[in-house]
Image (cartoon, rainbow, N blue to C red; front, top):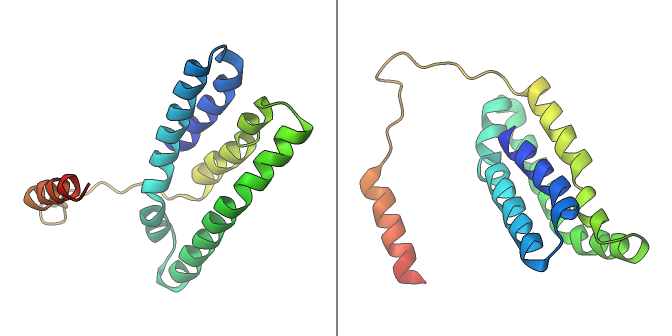
Length: 139
């Protein structure tokens, strides 16, 4: 819900406040941050929301929508720029954010608190640092 809200607010404020190119870039960066919040937990959200019988289909449908979104984005953006102002590119995503926010409220189950110490997940600190180190070396 945070990702949907953050992306929607950034999309709304970008055309309203952006009077310079720097401010517009700033709001695009905020949109990127909101999108990263959304996309980083998508697989985990689907895995938690759907049971074993429906999980594979849900993950497949998610992959289809992501692919269609990436493929159709430039075409939709071009259409909006051709027929409307550049503001429409930002406003276009707001109804989808609202729909996602509402669907999350209605469909996503509440988190269950884990009281047993055995059930708590522990962070793999050595693995995380090794991954970061190797990613920096790779770049």
